Image (tube, rainbow, N blue to C red; front, side, top):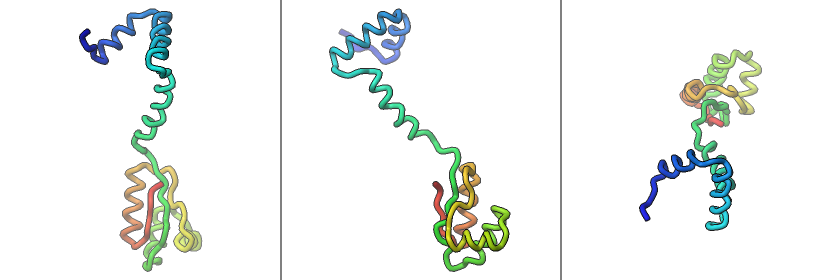
Length: 121
């Protein structure tokens, strides 16, 4: 028996009636001991995890030794007042949430250039 390509199998299934597809699934369960629908459900989270992130949260971990420079950058990025920016520099936390990846990387670079430790979540 000649080996069928994936596309040939899909084309053959497209031509089947619903009852024939159900019989095929039942036969696969019996032959291989695996429910094909369970395999499809199990594969879905893997595919979702492989999707590229489109947004990120910029998290300040440590302001470093040049805290004044970091505070200035935080104020430029967020528009926070001096006290709020200082508190964020002292305690760490989210600088910007749901930023596009380009914007998040730009913010991260600016903060790291000022001496901060930053991560994207």
